[in-house]
Length: 444
Image 1: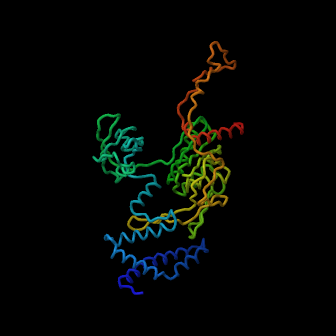
Image 2: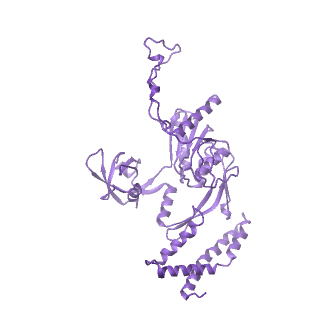
Image 3: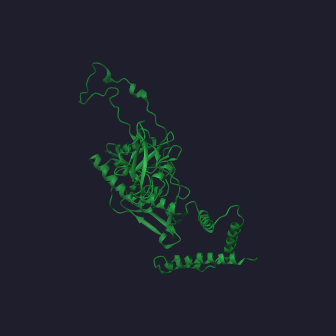
């Protein structure tokens, strides 16, 4: 097979580019006394002959594309696409990250980005302010929940997706941006704000009822472990005494940072293994154990999961299930049992590479299988039964006798209360009922 000088030169260049990192990667493995078993495999890889024939084919394909493709295409585009293809064919979670994707990943894991501090939604094709975040440019400028954002820097938002609008509001810190708002159907008015560092919290918490706390984790970010610790302390303070139970909601949580998952599980465990990982390289062999501190004070715990609970969510759920610390309720989880490592490259690019599989304390891999809850509860729509409020009671009868033990009468309609999260969320209401039942059987 004949090759042009250009093809041979390009193939040699690619071979050198591929060969150099392999050679240097073997050095740390040789120097590592902790995992000597990992050395031979790495050395074999480094000493294996380069696939010159395949590299020549690659160079020839690239040359043919440049010469014959219907539109001109440059070397940079072809090579970047080749890298993307190389990673995308490994598994669904390994990827080549360009500058924008790499920055987005960093923002999502850190919870920080340059923006205005507005939670937005979409209503009838309009971008609507759901809530301004406290102590941000938006809240300081007087932006209110319910405001419609009709223009961003003079460009109409109607017809744009919510993602497109959010992308326009995010950007370089300190840069000014003008929003045109409509409030309560009035005339449009402009508000000019300067972007600032916005910190998005991944944890929300509240008391569902006296004694029963609720913690929702939307994503595992760098600070999620600390946020859960603070949420537990605040729930206890708001309750005025030790809680009677906690619901940890991991539904539709796609995962995130491994270390944060370990920290969250550790808040509810006092001993034992949380998770361990296995991979080909020495530093992928990790074991994480709980420390004796117990931020949850050992109160009954129910964890909600569903098909959207993935990765770090499954690490937490699996650890709490194996250690018999919590009852898992909901539906089967997603089944992502692999760990990705982000490897920064030059020019603000990175590789996101699957480097290990993780295992629950009992040695379970949940890869492609998921975690099965202890109690399956499928989503259901809750509707209030209005007839219950029409029931005629003893206390409604004229001249009825009072209760000899004292206390106020309870006529029809006396038990009306404000809407609560569990009133419209069937799985949450079932979790709360289970916690109450556990306390009754304990005699609390």
